[in-house]
Length: 92
Image (cartoon, rainbow, N blue to C red; front, side, top):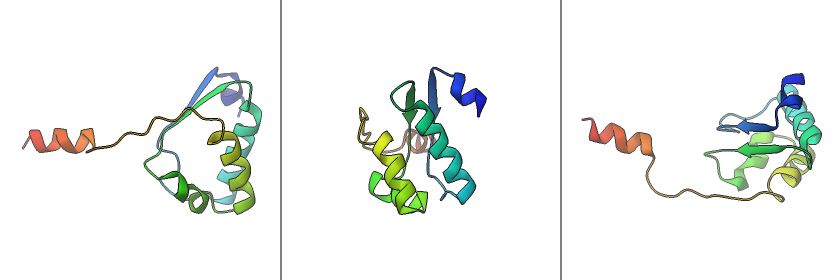
């Protein structure tokens, strides 16, 4: 956890690809709490925000995490085909 505290910018790439277990929820909550309002976080996820509650798995913890991530975020929403998919089609 010390590594996460030291970083000025933390990138959580493909967050919530799989649902979190209790230990992962606790770790993520601690990381978000420690950084909130002090250091930057970039979050990427293929999962729509509305489905994040299910991926977190505990409504109370989800409220705390999402309140700090989503409600203070600058959002960039990408649309269209996946670049990986397009490259795969071109290489055929």
